[in-house]
Amino acid sequence: MITIGIIDDHSLIINGLLKMLQNEPAYQVLFTAQDGVDVLRKMSEQLPDVLLLDIELPDTNGIDLCKKLLNLYPKLAVIGLTNHDDVVYVRKMMRNGAMGYLLKGTEKESLLQAIETVAAGEQYIDKQIEQQILQQSIHGRKATAYVKLTNRELEILALIANEYSNQEIADKLFLSVRTVESHRHSLNQKLNIKTTAGLVKEAYLRGLI
Image (cartoon, rainbow, N blue to C red):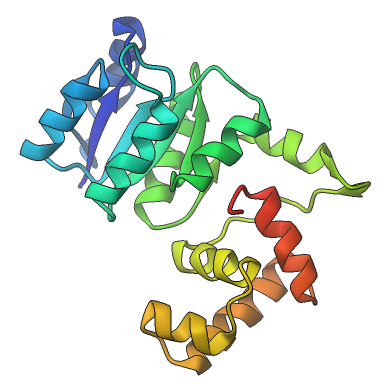
């Protein structure tokens, strides 16, 4: 069973999400909250696997709250929940550690898929936003397809972009150099990128740097 927390300052949104999740035996909503103070208190009492986090709250910025929560609870999987379909917001959320980004008003099927995906340690981006990322140009180059990466691959991609050597990445993440090389090869294959410069650009597109 995947446990879930919901934070949104609109009761209508919360009730809509609860309705989609009811009668789904694979999911359990532990709590709902309507501001940052409330969610911090409730998470100290019950820690969910996945948190649906509104990025606009009355007492705090949800993007900053995401970073704070993940500093406190590193294993938490956060899905940004918003009306904003601007890619800039996606990058900010991902830079602060969110694993998913979902537009409000999403269909039930997409909500459940997002929860399942981030609970498994992979990224989920709303399909509407994926299309924008695909169409966006960076320095005259079309953005690569937004291939889903595992949490470990994202960590390694970010470190590569920050000029860490394979040995330094291995030391930082407590891995063997061979394991780092394997992850790096996987990144090259998934993203169809052959150079370090290409990986750095991909990290930028994903908001990791």
